[in-house]
Structure formats: C-alpha cells, structure tokens
Length: 91
Image (cartoon, rainbow, N blue to C red; front, side, top):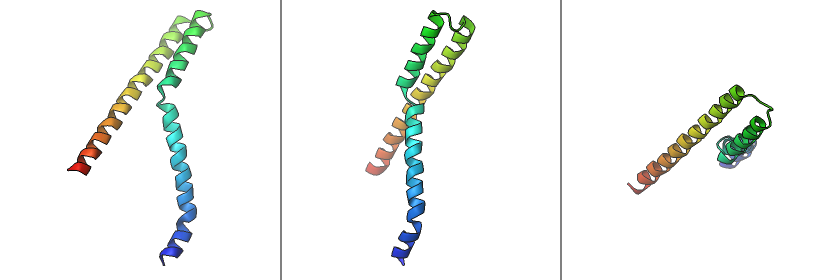
C-alpha cells in the first residue's frame, strides 16, 4: 500500500520540490543586498551623467533604501526564528 502511495505521489512531490527551489532562488535574489547596492550604483551613475533628474533619483533612491530596511528586518526575523527553533529543540 505504501509503495503505491509513493508511486502515485512522486509526480506531485517532484513538482513541489521544483516550486520550492524556484521560491528559494527568488527569495535569495529579492533579499540580496548586493543586488540593491548594484541598483544604487547604477542609479547614482545615471544621475551623475544627467540621464535622470534629481526628483526621480531621490524617489528611486528612497525606494531602494526602503528595500534595504526590508532586507534587514527579514534577516532579523530569520535569525529570531532560528533562535526560537534551537531553543525549542533544546528545551
């Protein structure tokens, strides 16, 4: 009975595994500080060469700094979750 269940559920587990891996990659890219710093450098360059005006520069810069703040909060939550999980395992 368990063998039949494993065979029938294998495709669903495979798709679930793929979705989890895609999710991990998306999250890693979205929460990458290096990506945000690269965008800030490009934005600064665009402003310096006159490609964008000061108003647009300020608005985009603020959005990128907000993303950095979001990343910091996300990393703090992850650390807190890990600490709580370790405490539960030890307790």
